[in-house]
Length: 108
Image (cartoon, rainbow, N blue to C red; front, side):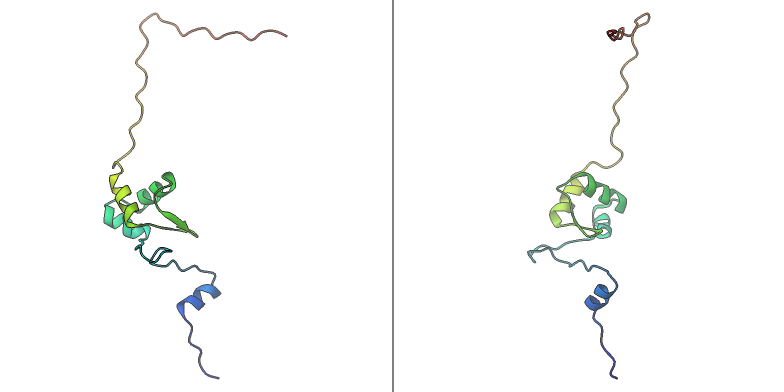
């Protein structure tokens, strides 16, 4: 019995894994993993994945993996760094002012 050579594709299929190609469907666009994008943009992998989940125009989901193009990297670089600004609380009401009364429900 001769030894059988197994390719990566065959091993992936038998183990239920998916292989993400390094080029997009049209074979003209280079794609990157979330780790590669994080390194190229100076962001964390978590930030890159949050951007992909929040912004529909950033990245594409292939199975459980995200794939990014050069245009996606430019979009991520354009996003503001840091935590989103929170809305400031309304200024305190003047002394002696009361909240408007709530309307009472009509009795049946």
